[in-house]
Length: 146
Image (cartoon, rainbow, N blue to C red; front, side, top):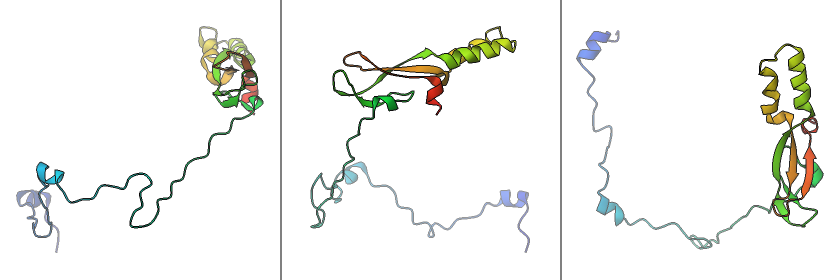
């Protein structure tokens, strides 16, 4: 038997049997407020007589100042001995200047040679302590690629 054509199918849409779909109306607002559902257990409360096991993540370990990359990192400041997230400022480094010079020598003088000064990967990252403001480390753009 062939399926009906598009015109025949659009004239007589199929009748769905509602008994197949047991659709219940949603409960009223007041009925949903007074439902007999039990609330979830609170922190440390036993569920059905079994104790609740709570696991926590280990505390982050500060890295060495010499292992800082081009993003802020968790370090122990050698000056004030606090564990801090380093403050990073970016300055144009040797890679940005060399790329600018290379683009200028290729003839891209009308502003395109300034693009390397806007690329963060070509800039040097100067790390400092946010508390004592002392200099921690400089990650050059060439050493960040290693």
